[in-house]
Amino acid sequence: MIKNLYSRLVMASATILFILLAGLGIVLGQFFKLFTDNEDIILQRSYWWFLFSVLAFAFFIGLFVCARVMKQYAKPIRRVTTTALQLAEGDYLARTTLSIDTESNELAVAINKIAHNLQQMSSLRLMEKERLNTLIESMGSGLLMFGREGSVNLVNGVFEKTFSFKKESVLGKTFKSIELPLEIQNLIEDVFMTEQVHEKQVKLNANGQRSYVSVYGAPVIGIHGNWLGIVVVVHDITELVHLEKVRKDFVANVSHELRTPITSIKGFSETLLDGAMNEPEVLKDFLEIIQKESDRVHFLIDDLLELSGIETEEFSLYYKTVDLNDVIEDAIRIISGSLEQKKMNVVLNVQEEMFIEVDADRLIQVMVNLLSNAIKYSVEEKEVTISASIVGDTATIEVKDEGIGIKQAHLPRLFERFYRVDRARSRASGGTGLGLAIVKHLIEAHHGIIEVDSMYGEGTTFKIQLPIKKSNNNESL
Image (cartoon, rainbow, N blue to C red; front, side, top):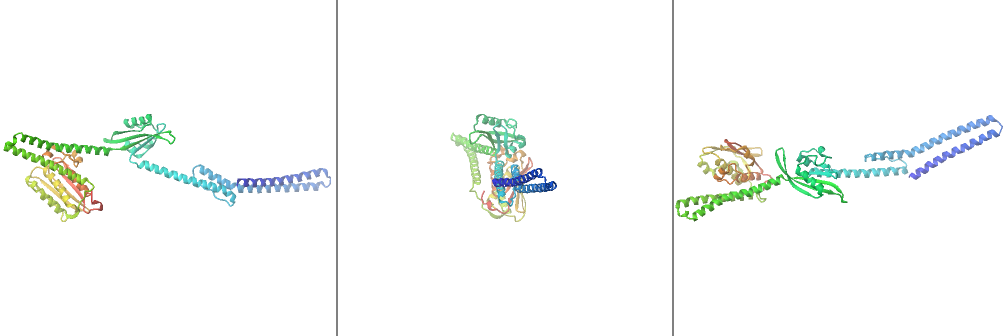
């Protein structure tokens, strides 16, 4: 296409030159004739001016034709040039229009195709960049990346939140200037120095709260083995550390709870075998103590098995429609002996015919546990108030006592296994420390909520909220 354009321009220029040369030749010939022929000089001069005018007119006509031809072929090239400049500036949506001349369209079509390919490559690049940014921001771990010169060139939102940083304040800075914890700084320095993977657990204290993170640092090596920098991943393991602590505490508590009664049983049985069994009064007292301690072991094992069963995936609730009044009356009937022993009364403040879909036996177990605690930790001749109502799709049950109450510091841990507000008093009352943990698991199995409110020295209130209808996912825990 370029060759054809060049040929046409040459031909047009040659034609104009030919006309000019021909005219010049004629002028020279007539000029020569003017000085060699003495005939009518006036006529010759007129002829000369006429010929000069014709040649001037032909010259300007040639210039006009050449300009039109040049403009016809230069205009599409100008449009293509403008489009190419827009593409060079990053505007990949720019396109050039096609002209009537098919030969001139070849360059425009090629530029448009290049623009289309660049647009596709740009869209793909933006999509991949967006995917990478989404992946980096969505990962649950903090990410920090350093370039080969040691300055930060990438940080995600999780890292900002963990260390209360702003991305703008750390980008481009070295790891020592962004005030990371000393242990993390040492790990990053070790990775830079050794070019090896390093990992450690770090304890953080932020805003008075303690947390634990696992810090992983590794060098970033290119495909050709060149050093690109390092990447640091910070993963929050606070929950894992807490679960590990709970597990250790559980083992320690079980061992402690079993050791006390077993030690008593062993000690009293050895005393009997050493001759105390020959004394009837001592024998009876020791046997009663052995029976009491064996009952403690039995209750503890039963509660452990109960709690373990509730936490398994196979645990199921057997729903049926019951009246809350019947559940409350059955629970009161079970603990009536303890009420009479302490001369306590139960005050009912309930609606009539409160029908709800629950596992009735499990809900009775919950009520018995809460009422037993209310009786254990109350002095004689006090009252226990049970309130129950249904509002909308939620049933609410409250058990309020006038007992010794619980200090506010103990309330957050009240439903933990083996947690006792007063260990000596709880153990003397025969509690295993698992009752409220079982209650919480049973209520959560019903997709309900249990809360506790207490004033030390005045009493405690347990509040249960349950859905009156089971949902499809309420079948099991």
